Image 1 (cartoon, protein in one colour):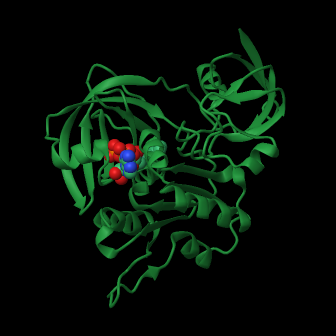
Image 2 (tube, rainbow, N blue to C red):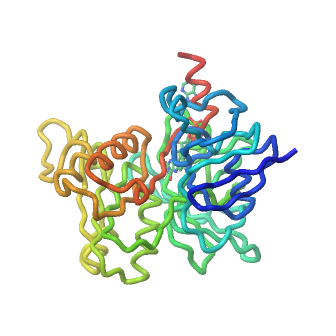
Length: 344
Ligand SMILES: Cc1cc2nc3c(=O)[nH]c(=O)nc-3n(C[C@H](O)[C@H](O)[C@H](O)COP(=O)(O)OP(=O)(O)OC[C@H]3O[C@@H](n4cnc5c(N)ncnc54)[C@H](O)[C@@H]3O)c2cc1C
């Protein structure tokens, strides 16, 4: 049995099977609904149910509050239709539907960028093209079928390589393996690309806001933007705990020297008696100190969920148009979050 989903803000409709999520049905039809984690956590796919009924197969997702449910908000990555639906939800520009593939990837290079961040260069098979847009993410498929999401840190290149920047989540299944056992030459299974966090070509002044390894997709997006020699201002803010967490500063210096990119690192825990003479505090506060009004900007941001939530609230309150706020929230895997909930 299938239902019709009416997307009122785009004046288009598409079919959706009774056991399929609205997001999966849309993507299958080439309708690029905005989405991020696909796990009901990050809120990128949140929209409004105007008429009809939905259910959530695994119960109400953590990324939506009771108040939002009462107001008719829905997370379409987890919503399954119980009837025909009329909905309103953000759609991103997408000139082509990108095929999601499962591929083996060989670890070509491992570099320690800081105490708890490793850069992996993965070599993809030469005969199997892997199309993606800078800023998208992939899943690593583990031996037991569990999946772990990581952002691609480079723009597409002819070498068929992917760069990842991986922070050690202590006690985490995959990153423990990466930091303790993985060798150059290892073959990992990947699936992707996923997500709609990529450059939207809207040509406003751009603020790029990264938290920790949220720098990875921001780097990919910026590399792609720079290829087009942009004539609009771009300012990168990067929030980290301490000065020793900063990495790839030489690359950023090239961007500032050669392309006029503005750069502000912001430390939240610089430590007592620190020598740091740059910005301190939370990254969203540093953004608003410099740009109290955001109505003229597009903002691209990625990082831990707490940072994304603070930025969303603060930036929209400062006049940023919600349609020009693009983000990926680096939530932990759902199996780790479920295990933590059970323990609590
Ligand atoms: C779209 C997206 C893109 C991402 N991109 C990146 C990226 O580019 N770089 C990056 O570094 N991260 C990124 N992440 C975050 C990354 O996917 C998570 O940190 C992931 O969970 C790490 O996998 P893991 O197997 O090492 O840890 P997991 O096994 O998922 O564990 C995560 C944490 O939970 C704890 N935990 C697990 N089980 C329990 C339990 N039973 N009780 C208590 N604690 C427990 C672990 O100790 C660990 O600290 C991204 C996330 C998303 C959603």
